[in-house]
Image 1 (cartoon, rainbow, N blue to C red):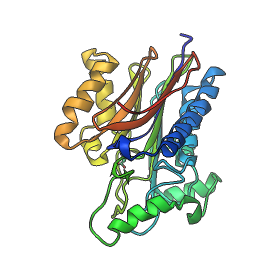
Image 2: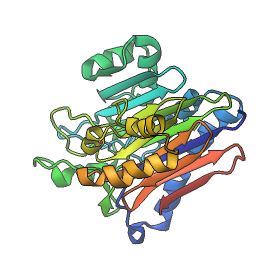
Image 3: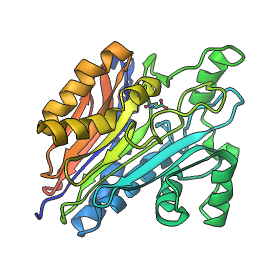
Image 4: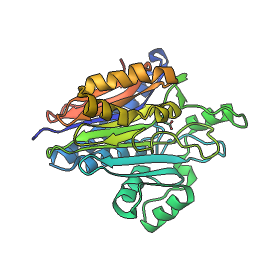
Length: 308
Ligand code: ASP
């Protein structure tokens, strides 16, 4: 095995093409391309899939147009509560954080949970303490502030409504993620999100849930999801793609098609996912009108897309 592959997403949803000014589309594509470059640099140097997905997701977290890290949506208390996870396909190690504030790169903290904590998922104040112990970079609230997100929140503040990340006049899920295959045949996946605007009760979505929003197994595939988290958890989406491949012998494309187009819609599961298998096949599929996405292989050609 000497090939490698990387795919990324910046969220799926209703993204009306006519409402997207060319300058904004250009900015989104730039954000995607920067993330592809970050992951590609790792993989083309013979690095690990795990390091590549972390590098790509960090880049997406630093980019304010996506709902993760800087640019994360506001919860009902005006805070940014972020969720992230990462998984290694070679040994099924995984790490995740839920409901963390002020951590610059939640995916980096998830990686440390995996490598150093002895746990898989930690949350809230405890996760913040762990972040302190690990000396990960923290940022004040101002760093996470984005006027566009703030205006989104103002529309629903004080109501019971919580909202998936509406943007550009449409319904959009701005979560980010990456999946990769490295030259040693190892797979990895990572996902990071600010969740839903005006979320309450320390709501947690699918993104930090291993098997729901994120999964990687060298025997089959690596998956990162974006969409209506409640539905994605009920459908155990990422693990289901793996299970259809492992237990039923389906191809990656067929397994993804069944989950995204047959299983999710009856559960109100709008969204999509990115996937790579152990041969380097990439599938980027969604049941919404668009998904910010990109891919690169050993040829070094960066491809980005938003609509079908
Ligand atoms: N899946 C995420 C969540 O429910 C939202 C998204 O994909 O944008 O938290």
